[in-house]
Amino acid sequence: MLQSVGICYRTPTEKLYDIDIHAELRKMLQEVADRNFMLMGDFNYRNINWKGTVCVSSASAETKMFMECVPDMFLTQHVKCLTTDRSVLDLALSKEPDLVYDVNNLGRFANSDHYRLKWDVNLQNKECNTTRTGFNYRVMNVQGTRDRS
Image 1: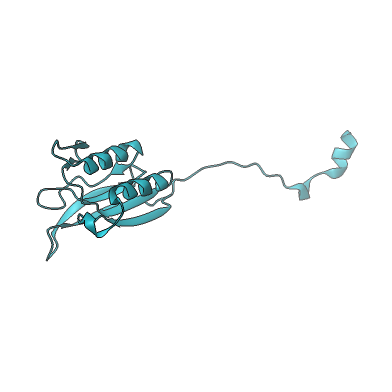
Image 2: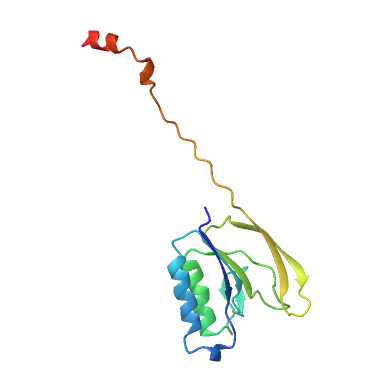
């Protein structure tokens, strides 16, 4: 069952922060990788071919490290369609390959270069059929049990 949902925006303007935001993002993914989670948002990693799950040769070192951490943590990236005119920057990551399905591009936001996305999430619990034997001791023949001893 899905344990947590998160939203991510990784700014391409790295000078805003005094920390390595790429390393912090990978660290956060490592921290939640053992849970059933979904993380979605604008990761701003260009030059990744998500259909082939490979980086383009011109990809930055940070992009390549991010791309390597996704399969290393057994994560599934569900968005394969373009989220801008030339790239897949908006991602939906999860531990469960069947969690997200039917991802659709709904067209451009009014004042943005990004497209709106819609997808379905499978939140159904898997049924677990168990059999448990129970005894009704109220109808037990106590005297008959004593006589057999």
